[in-house]
Length: 184
Ligand SMILES: [Zn+2]
Image (cartoon, rainbow, N blue to C red; front, side):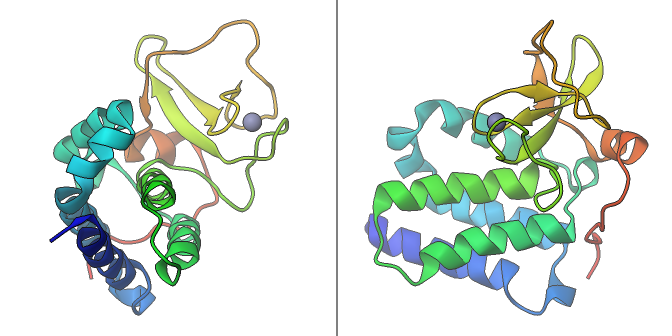
């Protein structure tokens, strides 16, 4: 199968993972689906985004469903990205960009419809700084970092030892989100 064939299969996997009856969506099924698509696409991703490929590789290989959480809004966010690409003629670069975005919006906690960067309005993803032991929100577009729970921008120091915040950390520090369950 060539790249277009692989992309088509990946889109089918993502589609059945996301847009079937929402009651069937579970974290385990999402992890499984993302790993399946990654198996088809990572060799192409390597040429287009070598840095991100290693990062995603690590993330997917080490991912334990109990370590992260998915909210209904995150699912909606990923479905919007998928719907934009699924009926269009495949453009490899654009597809890869959207595919990486789907991986990010499903695997890194954020509040897509209520939380945004006050400089550029993009989504803020939640990370944990492993050195300073704090959770911060980072803008996906301009990279500005914010505290959680306030609009305060972090100007005095930059956190750089970041990994996506885990489910436990999110539950301890963030409220008002609707989580997708692990079991079907
Ligand atoms: Zn921004």
